Amino acid sequence: MKMSEEKPKLKRGMGDLKVAIVVVSILLVLSIALNAYFYAENTASQGQVSTLQSEVSGLEGQIASLQEEITDLSNELADLKKPHLNKVAFTYTDYHPWLSTWYVKIQGYVFNSGWKTATNVEMYVKLYDGDVVIRETSVSLSDIYFQYYINVDVDVLYYSGDADEWKTEVTFTYTS
Image (cartoon, rainbow, N blue to C red; front, side, top):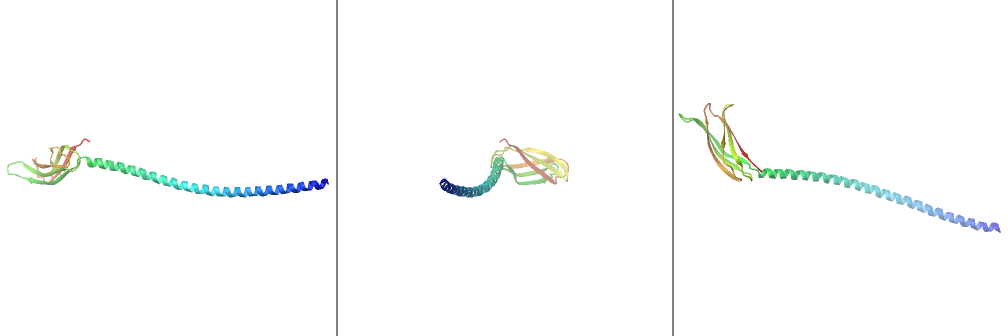
């Protein structure tokens, strides 16, 4: 009888072993499936992270570009507020009076199209006979307030040659 008593224990032990193998197999398959799922999720997340990093980089570039544009526009605005002098309807007439000094009459207007007053306004004049400068001088004009003009009527005397060309340049002082 002793033999028969041992046999059921062995059968019962074999049944427990089969159950344990099935449970371990199920856990192994479940573990593999979960690892595959999480690997796929991780790969997808890494793709999203790469995409988001690219978008962030692009947006940072746009921010830098916009900051540069703001700086440029601020500088442009500051420049527009400065005095801007324009010569308007300037005429140059060469006069040769009998028994008197020859001169060039310069007439026109200087208009300040800026938003600040131009101070110490001067007009530099060069008279030429061909390529030779025969007279170089400056004429002080009054300050020109913003969005205002002054009348220019100046006689520039010259003592030699014949003025056949002239150039004028208007300069000013501006303190912001």
